Image (tube, rainbow, N blue to C red):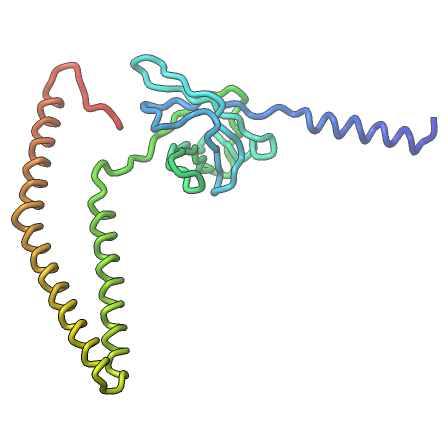
Length: 219
């Protein structure tokens, strides 16, 4: 058999052997599923390294998610690695498992190993986000008003320009009245109602915590 043909066969066998390496399979134990589902990504440093193959409830003890890690990244998944379920920024409404590598000298996890994970909590009432969006909206409106005022100063005097200034004065008055009405409504109506409803939720939470044999559910 020609040497070149023999070498080609050997190379093909080595290639097939290398491609046949199995994925690293792990069992991720969670107190709550956090919305995780089969097909969600598994990432290390924002790089996709695998996927979630299954999520099962385990009665009172929580959930078990099965992970499949690509062979080329198995060495990075060590015994001190941490596993966190979080929102997937690349897929709206989906979750992903973030693997945070541990110490460099630690041994890699064995195939089929069970590991503990956690779910990164999101705020139930994202007040900061709501206020930030409201503030950003006001900022855009303020910039638009300032830009219009600057442009108006450069317009030569004319009958049409005066009509435009009068219309602008009327609109500015409406903006100021709306601002005052909004502030008054927030102070008198919205904030007291929110405080009252939040107090009711706090009372229900304390009652739930005081009930024997029960604890608040992780959301």
